[in-house]
Length: 283
Image (tube, rainbow, N blue to C red):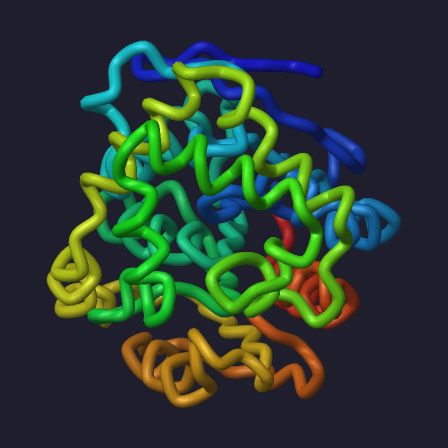
């Protein structure tokens, strides 16, 4: 598994598809307590259509390479890592794709470094003051200490606990018990990863995306919002409101998907990314 060492962290990543693709590279940003596997179904479909896909494991709690400097772990700090990662790989004009917390990070990234991104695809994600939305405000508060994380993640070895509304049960139509359990393993077994997650959650502030929302209308490049209509946390009205911020946007409604649209309906997400990517091939 390749990795790149940035000033703040070492990022492991997977690639799919031809590196010499005629289409812009696709870089994915997952959310808290998941990893690159959120996107595999989407990337496999895009790779078959000739897209070069880069799937990093961002340091958001399910990563396996600990970050030494916890001060770097904030939403804006991860957005800076996105910029540094894209630069380190020599990519440009990328299609940036985000979900859940990763969609909020994408908003911060295009605000800070808009020249990195040629087009943006946002699936159900944090926006405005929903950072995080209820009931994850409760979950985040419970996970702001290493002892509480280890205790709760120990309880979540029980599959039924991971299907509750305070866990993956609210995010997925049909949670895969093996996958959801594996996302919690790094924190269970590595105190450094646990401390990374604590540092990140302590830096989450629901005013961050309110501030950036005032500047997102400046991003004039294509934006596609792919929104699961069955999401009770990131509601359809939030997706439409987010899309309306951008001058050049459209909304794709996915009827039978919740927050993790890339798992619930990978065809919908892949189709949206392919459409926006093929609309402007690389020279």
